[in-house]
Image (cartoon, rainbow, N blue to C red):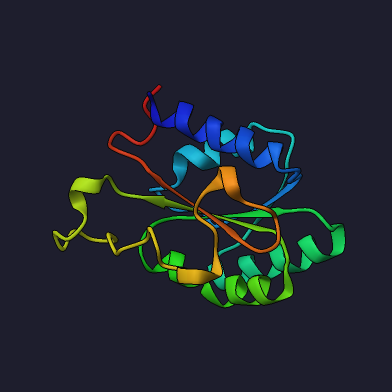
Length: 151
């Protein structure tokens, strides 16, 4: 499956949860997600700072009473969403945190931007989309291989 097919699948999943808005923090690793989401009917908000994007999404989710997504690139950019994830967890706000990641083979190798992202939010975000009950955040960690734009 191509990276863009994976990204389109993430988009459809996000839309199926009722999200109509997404905050985007662009980077190279998340470019397949950006391409897919930019070509959608979602309202997109562009941010340089992941922490600001996550808190903006949290506020929009509270206001709209529906999930709002946030897309970040890999590495420490993902960690910047932790404060908003904790707030969403304790407030019961549905927030969809989407992080791009490097392939599994890069983990534990010291490769740039390859921190352990899978469980970075610990108990503060669900990781199983099928079981997510929208009573707090959901974390979707999506691994993309090179070339990133592969169609």
